[in-house]
Image (cartoon, rainbow, N blue to C red; front, top):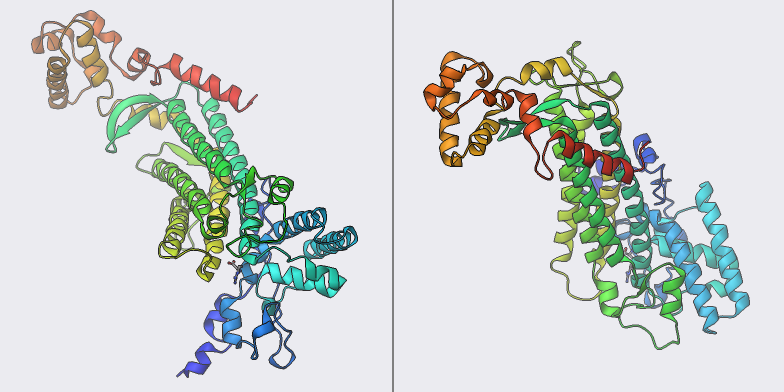
Length: 512
Ligand code: ARG
């Protein structure tokens, strides 16, 4: 039996389950290329002992210190330390602006900037002690700076609030995250094109309702994914442009009477301009909603790719064989080789969608301006970014490690009368109205079904018995190869069309 005290004691199961550990491998790999968001490294946090408590930076009006439960419930340092690089960047820009505006001296500015750079180095080397009693990344860094350089550091928070500070950090973090994700998206596009180039001319059944529909070139299908990812990139480009405005100087919500220059900090930090309205600047999280919406759409695209490849790797389809390097086995069934990475791409899309829903739900009932609820905006974003980077990376790797089983696909092609629609087009070319030709071909298919044969196997007499309009040219339309050759509309699966699209993408992605 647990007493309620035991349930909330530091050794309770939740503390155990959510104890901080170092970053798992795949995650650091996901962040290892272009993206600059800080590594998700979690050192153990030091909690101040009750007897030896440091005064809070906001503690002036308080007579009692907060309880341990409140302290650990309200802290955000365990996750917002990811923002530290951007917090320091923002503080340096702020100090430079304060000096330019004579709110601090040039000497104070230099001491602040040097101190911040020291802290940045200590964070990077893992020496920096993150303290839970200092609540969040902003106060951890500010308090450490005061400890290091004393009085000048106490001027850094002039004309700034954590409300505008956190959003400056967060927008900068997201901006880099977007750049990283776009890099991974391009790598996936390159992998898909590489796969397409390896499989020139391969015809696969095209499906609607998961029923055999018409023959398509595999390259055409792979290019469909490339197009989708291209729009995903476009959404991120748009989102980045709308996000790239600076909240710094909005202060708590109303701005300030001190003579700050918001345009200077905005420019120093690479923003397009300062946000126009200080209340809006500290209240809204639409920039992350938009970002996570874009990620959710990408996740859905990748999930569909995952589903397709999982299906195609099954015994029933047998269209692809993933290499051992991207497969995993079963702990009980020795014969199993499973396409787990793509199953997990499909599965992890749920988290990315969930992260968006968390954020939307978080914000929907909030009055203006800042509310502490908004501290909960970060973890879904970190999770969404980490997850989508992993999904993109593993999909690209999978694409480079699958083989299309040409024989198996070849054998599968005759089933399902994939050339029936092309046959209907043949009749249209001969002046038969489409509805009538649809009916004629339908009857030809019925004849095939009764004879258990393909359209190609029907003799001219048999075809003429259905309708005398048929002549010997009909055989130029039958069979999947002939059918593919008849496609000619823009964007179609016709060989020439697919070749020119492949050429477009190969050039655009600079693939040699
Ligand atoms: N950790 C806080 C957050 O992420 C920083 C802003 C806190 N502001 C405040 N007035 N308590 O939202």
